[in-house]
Structure formats: C-alpha cells, structure tokens
Amino acid sequence: MLSRLLPTRLRFIRKKVNIGNGSSISRYSDVEGKYPVTVGKHTSIASHVVLKANNGPIIIGDKCTADSFTIIRGPVTIGNHVLIAGQVDIISNNHNYMSKTQLIRKQGVSCKGITIEDDVWVGAGVKILDGSHIKKGCVIGAGALVKGVLEPYGVYVGDLPHMMVPVRELVTGLVSMR
Image (cartoon, rainbow, N blue to C red):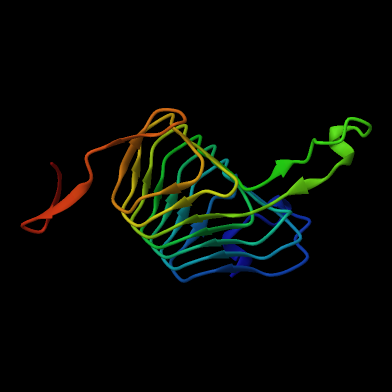
C-alpha cells in the first residue's frame, strides 16, 4: 500500500501507515512521526499536506479530502465524509508553560486530542485547537478558530467565542438553512 507515497517523504515512521483501497496521499505531502497513520477508503490527501503523528495516532475515515497546505498533528480522529479545505491547521497539542524557572521548550507538551465526526465541512484557513470535538454535520466557515465542543449540524463562523448561525435541517432530502 505504501506505493502510493513517495518513500523519501515518509519520515520517522516507526509504526505502520495504513492506506485504504482507492485512497491516495500526494507524493508532495509529508507523513511523519512515531505513531500510526491510518487513511480510510476512497480518501484523498492533496499536495503539501503534513500528517505529523509525533504525539499520537492520526486516523482519517472513508471518503474524506484534505486539501493543500493543511497540517494535521495527532492525536486526531476524523470520521467519514469529512471535507477539509486548504491551509487548515488541526493541532492537538499545547506547550506547557506554567513554570517560571524552566524554559517553555523544556516543559513538554500536553495532548488531549481532536475528534471530528462524520459529514463535517471545514472551510479554508480554519484553526482547530487541542481538545476540540466537532460533532456530526458541522460546517465551519473559512478562517474560524475552533476550541471546545461544537454541536451537531451547527454552522460556525468567526473567532472565539464561536458564533453559531442557524442549525442545518433536513428538508425533502436536501440540507438547507432555516
């Protein structure tokens, strides 16, 4: 399965990289870290995407897309049918900084992880911070900053605190705004 990757772009992988049938990771993307990276079936990872599994695994579901210049730092779990636009940062770690007597870089990191459930659309330039849980059906507008738990089928725009616009609803088989 690793034939879909340019071998020189795989760095520091000590555990398995699993790529589902019909999926691809661009030869111009980087996959690195000591934890496993799993990509489901019929998923596309575009050029210049960085998958860093240094602090935990990265699991991406079936029929997902991650567009160019996106960075995903594990631990991250992404469900099925998730659309991630370009230049999105999904960063599941924070530097510890409470000690005044120690350099921040020497205090280590904390990682709660990030979960993105099924059928989510993440707009261009979105930043998703550690500990976030994006529930099923959410839409996150371009440039938004996400921290915390987002309600199912919510549409979120802007910086913190999030501004939730009307919830998605099912109308005769189509999704519309109320």
